[in-house]
Length: 288
Image (tube, rainbow, N blue to C red; front, top):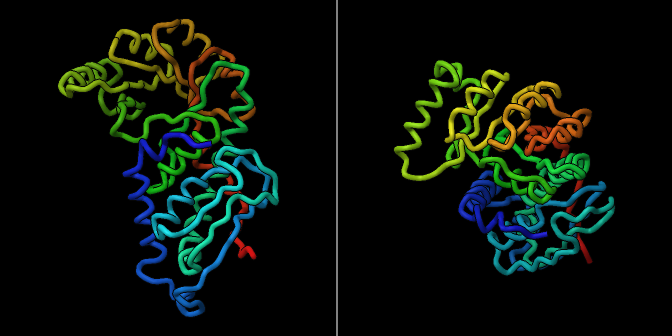
């Protein structure tokens, strides 16, 4: 499964790749230089050792071809496929030094992204019979956010804002530092009017009073119901009606996500999709 993530974030993904290559390789792979000749050719196959939703294969191809444009990369499965342990993911063929130089970077990306995609897929399946959509958060690994959010999409989830720059989200600390919901939203309204460009504005609410206050501001594009139990969410949704899209977040896991989705909330955001996903065991082995 290919989506437009790389097209939309090509600059950011390429920046990540360049820094990751520099981090690991710097300017030379001494181990490979010592044991191989510069013109040696080879072929290797990716072996997936756990059942999973595979993710990161497109990124792997980009990494390999960015490092060595003569590398031949052949998909055996596609991003988003549900595969069993023992499945072969791709075959990479070309200069042996190039294959080995990028091996660990490629494996690190795929194992992490596949873990995220697999966890996202499991959560999505739980709420699949509702209209609620699953969102990620900014609880990501520094300098690896774009691949992690890419993996959420591959797993069937949706991306929240990418960072602090592409949407406004007024959280509890903004409200508490800024003197309360009303004062903060009045300031935010003035700020937005001076930007000359429209941005989504999501406001985090902790109780019904804050929900009522937020409903007075047409600049708000979504109301987030933070750490509310089922009864509080239902009461908040009754107040909001169809006036604003809604999002539930905080203290949500497999035990209660379906009940929350059934309340009619439009979105559920889960930090665990990126911060708690277990990497998938994979390896790259020489192929004859």
